[in-house]
Length: 427
Figure 1 (cartoon, rainbow, N blue to C red):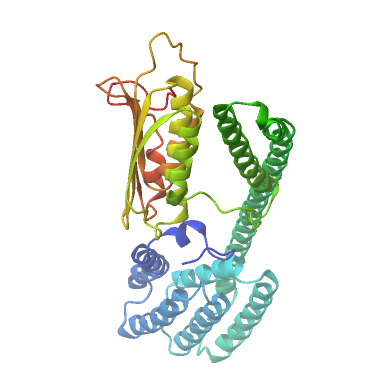
Figure 2: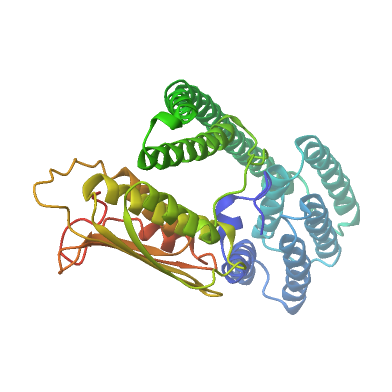
């Protein structure tokens, strides 16, 4: 059941079985007093038969009082008028509590029908009652049946309609308050989105002013030195070529990242394809030209793997080589990559730093970002000192996305390395 201004929220949230039980209880509450009081009014068979017929008609009308409140009111009122007139003509007594179903119907009309329509129905019902009183008096054999005593019983019933009307107004106020709250939440979300977009633009501008300009300057100096390569030894020329190539690649990736930050719709395509597992040998070759010792064990890369999986594996190897150059220069790095239709598995082992080397402190941002990237793909990453003194980074990235995003989110929580230290710490 869907909640509407004409449907109470608790009733809409209830299960169908409980709703049916509630409806039966309401109909029983409306009819039970009349059946209990009929024995003291007229215990004849004709009286019970009249009350039973009226009770059946009233029960059918009350059963549809929420969906068809005006029709329910008309059915109950008409059944009551016909029954009263017939009982007066046949000299049969009907309990005054027979008007209770009419009170329930009037409340439903005020609570679930448009106010103007329910007011017109109330006026029409009053006219029908007046006509019935006249007919009742005209058909009475000896004494007055259906005069001031009947009006005294029916006069308080419009109060039930007024209560229903007040309940409808209260419900509409609550619905309006919920709509205002929802509008406020949407407005707050829109403001947060605009603030995030402005922050992305600011970050992109700062990165362009600092990192992009510095990278461009680095490439420019490398190209200047390359122009005078005849004056440099062979090893220096190779190093300058590696610096220029790395600078250009970093500049291209920085430009793509800045474009994503500035783009508010996320529809702009990168200017160059994202790195894949097939690009790992070139990455290793660049590290070797920079003076590193790298041993790569890699089979045929699975080209059918999703691009995010291949990019995450590539970034992991790239970050590991960067950390090795920074914290253990000259140490041998072993990279083992396995890829198939199920996913990618990467293990990077870096030897200990040379004697006397003072490692530079790391912020841990690189490995933390990699762990979050891999966890978002449903994989896991561990990093930390190995028992043989080397630093090991191991990652498993499945090809299929996680079915439950919360499972991936839980993988981002802090863990411990095999040696007992935090795996997010960068060496």
